[in-house]
Amino acid sequence: MTLPIAVSLGDPAGIGPEVTAKAWDARHARRLPPFFAVGDARSVSRVWRGPIAEISDPRAAAAVFGDALPVLTVEDAGDILPGSPDLEGGRCALRSLELAVGLVRTGAASALVTGPVSKSQLYAVGFTHPGQTEFVAERCGIAYENAVMLLAGPDLRVVPITTHVPLAAVPALLTIDLIVAKARATARGLQRNFGIDQPRLAIAGLNPHAGENGALGREEIDVIEPAIAQLLAEGLSITGPHAADTMFHPRARARYDVALCPYHDQALVPIKTLFFDDGVNMTMGLPIVRTSPDHGTAFGIAGQNVAEPGAMIAAIVMAAEAAARRSMS
View: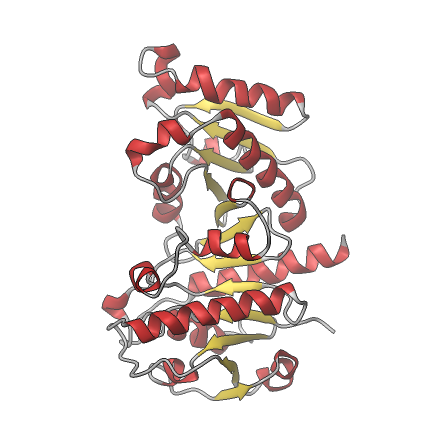
């Protein structure tokens, strides 16, 4: 019997509850596998009039999934007002994430899908990680450099080598060892989660025109090229450094399976431009499958019944496919 997928609802005042409920509505049309939400069930009922089944054990999810959205309630999140985050909601989001990770790690669920959270509210309640990716990695016993945030759309996958750091800090953080570790984890993740036997990696330069042979910066010569040489010696298929402004048109995208980019926006601008409504964040390098819709809490539209569920649906589908591949390996 296939285990259900755990979906942490994220901030109860954001659009996580709404898009999760809408994903359940689309379960037949999109042939979604059984999943259950983890959080405060009231955050769903505040924004959706569909049927909810509160469960206390993930094993009950499959039995009720056909008739109602299963919700494993963590705790009372206080007064929930869509669009108005508060500390109680932040605590609920964190505890929902903690529980959902634990359920997947112990084998009670097949994969983890994380709803969007408010980092400011999490920080206010003691969260010390840059984001959910780093938190999940730590809970799985994986070092930061060996966990990779991959963003995926229908025909583009990107990896930011550095993530939530100031742009001015990137050159010092971009080391040969970091690039090599991220590339290795990315290649292994594409094999395990996507079934790509020989992944083709392409890496962008840090500077305009990939540094113009040192005229516009030496990071390509001193850091990126030596990392590529080491990875080629290990047998990986990797090219670069490429000028980032020519990497994302259709012909270029056909030449690689994933683009590795030195900094956050270099990777996320193209994926969000092309696939804003159905982009998925998947963490490579973990012992579990973890995905997330590639959007935020969208407090400005929460509770208005206008949030698009496409990215949540895509995240559930991708998680299910990856979990199935892993179970057969």
